[in-house]
Structures are given as C-alpha cells and as structure tokens.
Length: 129
Image (cartoon, rainbow, N blue to C red):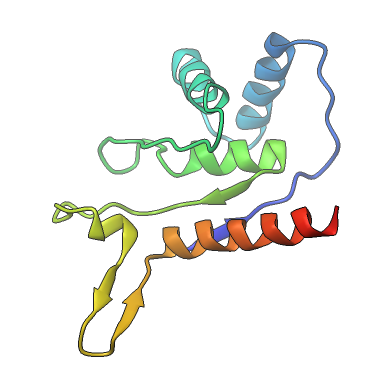
C-alpha cells in the first residue's frame, strides 16, 4: 500500500558525508541501529537510480528491512511504497497485477496503483506548465 511520509523539517547539507552522518544520528535517535556499511549501501542504491529509486531488500524477519527505508523516507521527506514479497511469487503478475477475464477488468497491485498515480500527477503538472 502506498505510504507518503513527510519530513519533519527542512534539511540542508554541505556534503554527502554530512547527510549520512545526520541520517545515522536520526536512526540512532529513533533507536534503530544499522551497520554503517548497510546505511551507505542503501543510500547508494537509491542515489544511483536516474528515473525511480527501487530497492529490493532481502533477509530474515526482524532485521530492519522495513525500518531502514521508512526512516530514510521520513528523513528526506520522500514518498515510500512498501511491498511485502511473498515466497510463492513466481511471475511478473505478482508485482504487476493481472487481467481478470471473468470480470473483463485489470486487477492492479498496490505497486501498479502507486506508479499509475505518479503518471497522472506528472501529466497534471506537465499540462499546468
């Protein structure tokens, strides 16, 4: 389900290292402890995406796969879509949805609904220019 999180305050940083130090402090203040390597890798995976930041996190339950991206989104004031992946997923339909032939209607997933809402928002902004 799409979640929009807003930042608590405006933040400006002189460097990326300053940003990462502030984010690690933010995590610590929330009681979240991650190895520096994990925080840096997560940040890097987001910043190298030209179009859309998509990160897939894997690991055992309780390791912070949900908390890290949620805290990052809160910190920077970015939208966040969290999709729990199911072990039985084995086709693109699990992420994209499927066409229901009985109802003659496409059944989108939460991810596709969110992506579509972004396209509509972009079109509105584009036409307003």
